[in-house]
Length: 417
Image 1 (tube, rainbow, N blue to C red):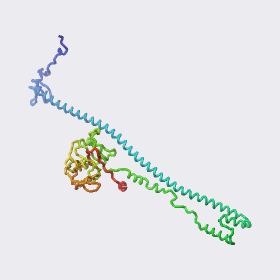
Image 2: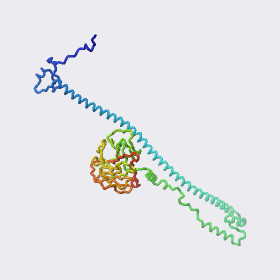
Image 3: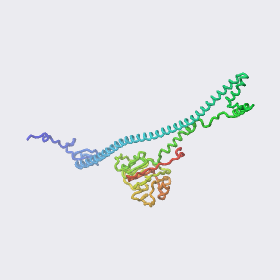
């Protein structure tokens, strides 16, 4: 049987020392070099040596550990790369959705302004129609009177041009035309008296009065126009003291487009696992935290059967399941299984609130939960110590009923600041 090339390939000889030609059987630690027995014997005092077998196992272990570390780092890098790609895709989706909502909101405002403009222009046109009609009637009456007076004046002027005999002969007929005085059957001197009476009465009549309010009330239409439109806009625009932050929302929460309502929804597509996001329970934060002053907001809980509202410390771990307790950085009023608790303490509530008011005084460390509908405390004031920024906190594990941040009623004085 013919030998294969592999069976005839020469076996490489074991490496030997380049100085002494002896086998390399020791590993010098100081310079990480293989040496022979003669090299070891002639080495400086204090040098350390391992056998080849021991050195092989030790240095192999180092590389294996390094390899494992690099593989773990590679896995972490790939995971981070995947997360970054997911976040980049999610960011584009956020931009598209946010752009659409911004356009929708401005279209609503533009529609409101357009309707308000048309309403005010229509009011201006109505006033124009009413006052123009009245003025046209007055113009018509004055035109008729001017025509009558002009005709009378011409008749008098023509009569005055007559000679004395003709003037006197036609005097009675002229008087009848001018003053409407009947001359037939009148006693001597009566015609003259009637003419004098008519003349005196005519001279006492006042000239036609120009009515007040005949012009367009420009001040009514233009006075504080922007302010009055803005004031009216406050009546159609909702304002909430807290806006939900979608970047902190658990994957099992659905939010309203205006970021004021949250519902439990276990079938949502998974969002990126960014550091701000809660990874366990159905939790979410308000978009703005605070580390001073007083804050309050109302939440409509309605018939929701499993909810919590309160505050959370900024440093609270959002990636693991935590208890709703001050020790875990969350202080909230919780309702579940028909039981109310605060900081693991069960409360006795005789009337289920439909709207809960959360009030926090960061500086004094006081926090209260109230029944906003009746403005009565659900529990006594809690004394705390805040050392860092806190955020409004919300939790809902009820699919049927959402939690809704209640809109505020803003007065004009508040809005002006």
